[in-house]
Length: 58
Image (cartoon, rainbow, N blue to C red; front, side, top):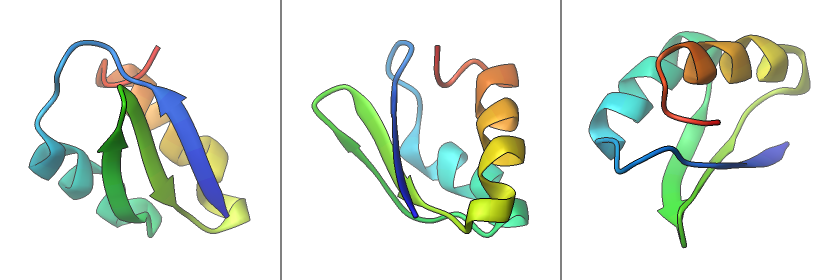
């Protein structure tokens, strides 16, 4: 599934990709201030919480 979340600030995409690896996230990119990546449905909530905890998304 593809997800999109508004970014907070201007985080390093390489750091975001590393943070998504444990959840199986892939194809992360930044599109017009939005973080977009693909992830399996069962890992979506955990990845969202991790990205939020690290301050990447709002």
